[in-house]
Length: 192
Image 1 (cartoon, rainbow, N blue to C red):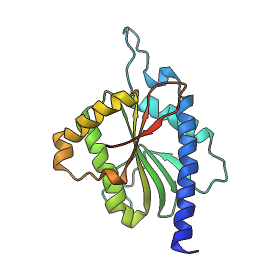
Image 2: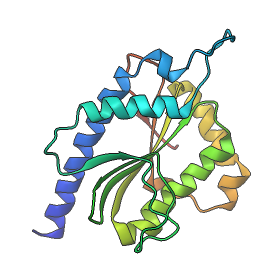
Image 3: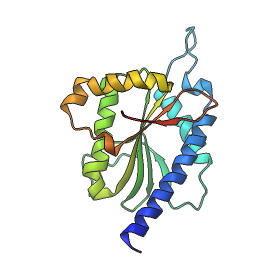
Image 4: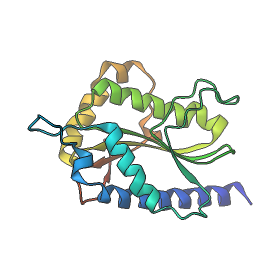
């Protein structure tokens, strides 16, 4: 198989996995996007609660025989080939091989902007540095609870954050999605 054929197959796998992810996002209920809290009038964004439910529905679409596997928060810090690797919220990979299709970082719309910038640094590192060693094909930055209108303000805040300005972030290596609310799928948004 030529490099071009392998790249086309990998791109097709990414498209399939992304379609499943977008379908899964539309199945996440409102109580997982904003968790009701006893004794409080307003529900709260809780990243882990959202991620577990997104994982559940994303995994629901996954056929048992599919080549790539979905994992949550794979810690590769002790890996003999990839030392000091950050831990992504989600990883789509072939376990036991250096075939990593997608890393995904998730934040709620009201997360600390500096933490969002840190996630972009992490995703850039996966694609740029670790991508050479471990074949990280794609990286997604995923914001939930945000509309496309919210995204324009958030994007400016993230990119103007001092962490983002002093660290190495390559937005050409990262795709961004926003998931506004229950019942509708997330949408891809531009960095411009």
